Image (tube, rainbow, N blue to C red; front, side, top):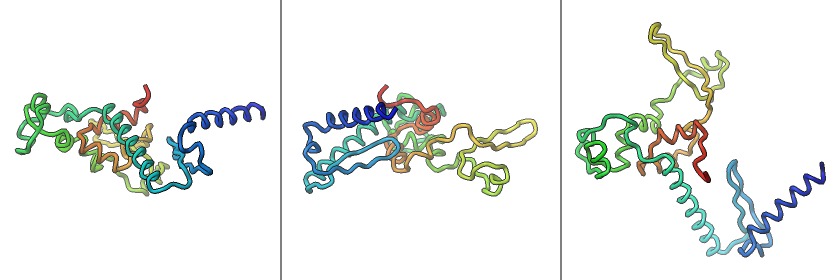
Amino acid sequence: MMKKEKNKDLAKLDCFAAMVEGTNLEDADCLDITSEDDVCVVFKSEMTALELASVIDTLGNLASDLTVVLAQACGFCDHCGETHTAEDCEGQPCSEACASLNGCKETPAEGVMHCELCQGLIDGSGAVRVPKYILEEAGIPTDAKLDVYADEDSGVVTVVEADIQQDITDVPPAIVAILAKSGVCLAELEELIMLEEIVYGK
């Protein structure tokens, strides 16, 4: 068992050596590693100003490319099936694409702005809020995501801990803002998150 683990570690080292071969990292005396849940970045411990600028540029380009992948997976907001007319644009300049789809002329960003569902995800107006002491009495963690159900006959509203504990609120606000300003459908983003859909590498 110990030998198997050792071989696995050696394989990792061989893989790393192959990745850095031919790069400036190969000759570096020491490397820094920054890691989070889903990413690991390796860079030289000591860099000149030009080298640091190059690293920043590379990471910036990577971030842009990955943002495009996420945006394409979500698509543009089409008002999430809501009826939308020229009057909804309030006289603002709009795009030809929206004009052909909705009878108005608006930019993609304005499409998100006019979508009630996407706006609710941005400002949190659609979130279920219950006082912490009530959650504690019910044995529900105070930071848990919640679902709400209504009984039309009795008028009773029931709040429960959601089966799915990840949604758009787990996305960094800066990323949500970038996507919204680009006209990306935030409702579709939330659905992809909740369904844990693979959007990269498929």
